[in-house]
Length: 432
Image 1 (tube, rainbow, N blue to C red):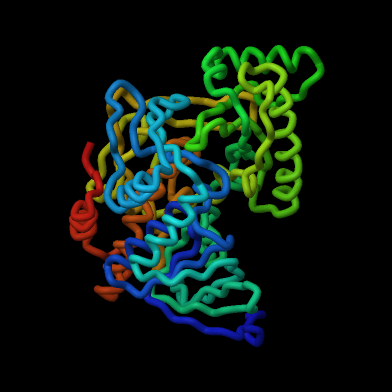
Image 2: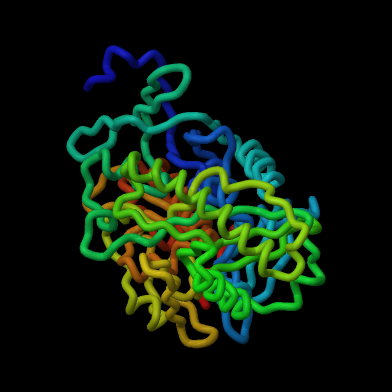
């Protein structure tokens, strides 16, 4: 171990969560609420992951279609209530074909995540990256993280990999799909916000009209808009609009050289879309550019090979599972490498269940995952990766980790009925 002599700090915990995004934060909070000594490691100086660095809307809480049914509940509801109490959220019905979205203020959300961590007695280590893992007979004995203080070895009974990129799973040698497979991973997006927008005038055009204007702009030869679609929506702040338009494709977003190039190009693209918006869209004539997303948005990298792999057929046929831990009714929304986005919907009002086994790396001993690195095919992943479902997965993973510690067993061997009952006690929705 090359870090052996460089480790200058050692820590011990019962449950270790790597990644403080929607999945990891919810996993840590659930574990803490269950009474486990829990430590969360996050690479930024704040929590939230995609929810605070890139986006401002939770999708997946509600299904699209005529019913507008809520399908995610439990501890995530506490998060929404805290945002609501601060007047920092609003509901946007049937947004972009994905169902009602919960739009929030990302800056307030950072504080809400921290508040919930404190209430659950979770220890948080910020500005820290995973550097390596120590394994013994497939069991992860410890995780080495690096930060300004040097290298820290963290020993834990159960580890939850909520890194998004399955970093711990890959470092431990467990197999994964996604990057490097025959199907390209989804494209990346740099989001941005615009201020001083005349919201009344923005109602003079439709999404399809905006897309037509994008085509016209490209055909004029005066603009370069790689994606002739995308969305712009209201925020919790008056006169401020948020966008999702930029599209960049790279084979492996975990390749730091390619990711660095994508970050630079993404910002360049964003300014070109802003130029188009000022020139073409009513209400944007006097708008000002406010900010880029903290980093480029990554939709898909590694997906673990789990005890069960969720499939496209599971999604579109609304399949049910005995070990269900969260519901999903989101369409398959594949931001592929071409100019368009591929949408495939479930039957109206239907949902499928996500099985607990999809959170368990195959043949692992003390490892769980939560969030977009779950075990799913490319198509199924394009449905289940919404932040609402990531929170639901995190909630289940945190409780499952607690049960594994309590019963001194592998996460695979916990009583799933007990897990499901605990989820229901918190208010989780497991049946459609």
